[in-house]
Length: 120
Image: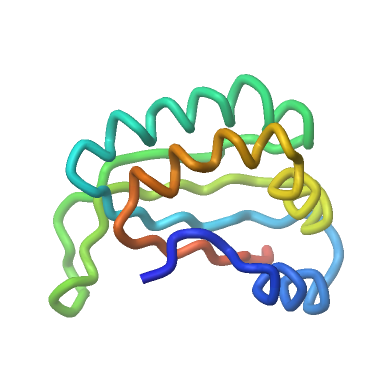
């Protein structure tokens, strides 16, 4: 299962840009010991990369009771991260400094959903 966006994913993400801010839905499933690795990644994200690219964490929390979900659809953590634009997010993930830190995220997770959302 993929946990990181690929080049083709990012290209489509930018092509489908409706303009304006984007809130990224992150659904995370940790590998063994992954919570600690993800915490290191999240620290770098919140202190360096989100300020650099104008992003902000709107919500971060642990998964809890699933009321409507099939087996295997429960998640360990949920995050909502707002960026001023899809292009700002794309610039962040292309940043060579970010590329060094994102390895922590990759090792921390066994499965993830990263979905762009648009406000109503």
